[in-house]
Image (cartoon, rainbow, N blue to C red; front, side, top):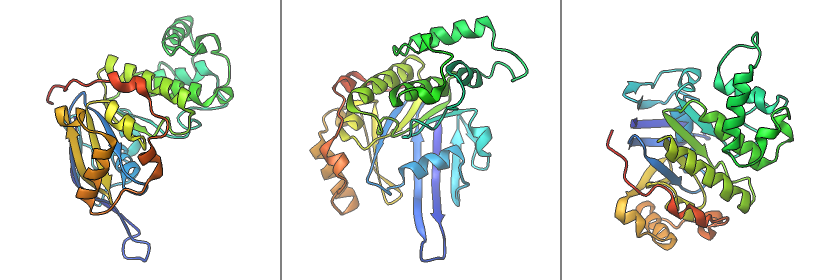
Length: 279
């Protein structure tokens, strides 16, 4: 479904601020994979997502999405096939517009010269009711007045309104309190599994990285240094992951958020553990 072949990206080349953000990354994501990605700050995780989305063109290598070479495809064209959520609940929606207006944008069912129909509203209410947050009764309310968890749930619904080929989750629960984060993660798991969405999720929570999905990647200094799935993954502990990091990178993981596993989500244990079909 998603392939990166020898992708490299260097920022500020030839200067004292030169930074190799992606270093010869080759990565094959199968259709239906739910991949958690972990690594210390600056490891290249968000840069990897930006490369996939087309926020910049890579220096070397190729990116393929559903068999199509998108390496030089502009970001706005890739956005039709890629859904993305960010850590900041304020991103991904229009705060001054109502819930139903935001969903109208996500649905792409008409232009602003047309009105939101009764059929649109019924569809929006039905989808909102699945979130379990009561937003179906507040469709006229501006999105900016919602809580962080409600807004992330709405943004998740918007990003998957039309099922994307790939869904990218960039620490989308990191800014939420643990209870709300758990609800959003459970909702994420349900939407991804119900729609068989290929998903990559960046997280600092090592427990979530092992509990959610079917595959875990570890990044360091712009490289994928560890890639685990199947029975090997199911047997891993957080201590095992820190050991794997030390063995693969040659240094000790020093990110307290990851080591402490802050905000663990016990109900995530049932997340998709079955292996997806090969592409």
